[in-house]
Amino acid sequence: AQSLHSLGPRAAGPFVTVDCGSIAPALVASELFGHERGAFTGADRRREGAFERAHGGTLFLDELGELPASLQPTLLGVLERRRFTRVGGSQELTVDVRLVAATHRDLRADINEGRFRLDLYYRLAVVKLGIPPLRERVDDIPLLVEHLLAACGAQDDAARLFPPVAIDAMQRHRWPGNVRELRNFVEATLAMRARRARAV
Image (cartoon, rainbow, N blue to C red; front, side, top):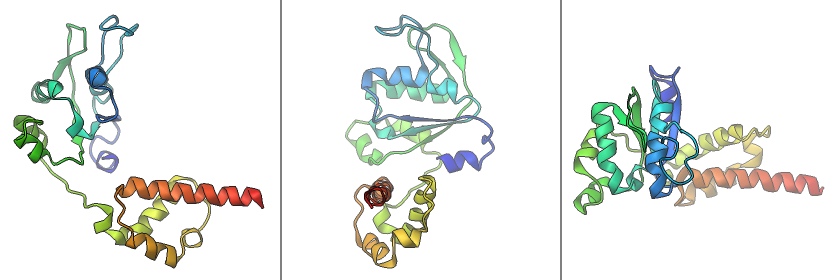
């Protein structure tokens, strides 16, 4: 999602991420659309939501399949009209955002079981990009390891930290946690190496 934003015509605009799976269902509307002061207990000031913050740029909804059913019609309306109101507000705001969404769920199955709206699915699925799990693209592991090491600020050569025998074992692993699991593994390896260095 970050690459699509950075390489697209909205690169100069904001890139805003909302993880729909990590927010309490009661707070998702506020996170997406913002709220006015006094809209609910604890709303002591007005807050801009993700749609407002992403105006002119890209809004990435991660784990879209976790979006509460009660909010799906609201999201559909915002995508259709490009307008919304903050929670507890009355003023309609207009936004211009590109929406990118991701999910690990099978939304077609969720539609068949009544957990996800068909009209919202078709509104979102203009362009679909399927990314295979890491276990199906193990040739990417060496490149991903180099990228993750650089992202961690590691100065060491990747081949020293992860010699061919280690890469071979990593390519045979199933990686149920996909790239997140690989990232954690790389970070743990760096942490353990730093700990050993301090011990010496």
